[in-house]
Image (tube, rainbow, N blue to C red):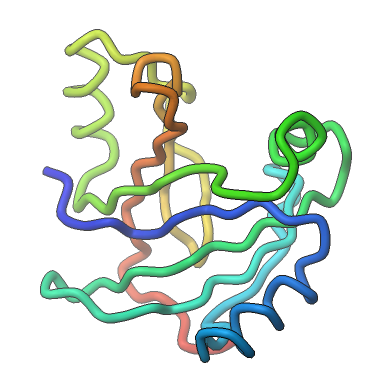
Length: 146
């Protein structure tokens, strides 16, 4: 069962400049940052708030580390902006299978490693009214360090 909006992914050309905008404009601070080589991105997670299920909601800022990454291709075509929406779930495997059974294409056969040790998969935007949708199961204990 999907429990919350986990994060909104925002593609950007310059991660440091974009982080500074969100810090200066809204007061959001970086909760976690990392490079995901498999996805070809450098990212920063800005925590917005805690949620009733013990999780949190974030903005995920994504800068491609290579032009051929999914985010790099998306930026070349669309420019900066909202890239995807992610819903939190306690069981990404079960929810992805249930959604696949409803005729929605799930992009990965098996969930992959996501931010902060999470497990993720994506749903095809053409099956979700034009919105790239991510399903996220948080790691048992998310890191508190940046």
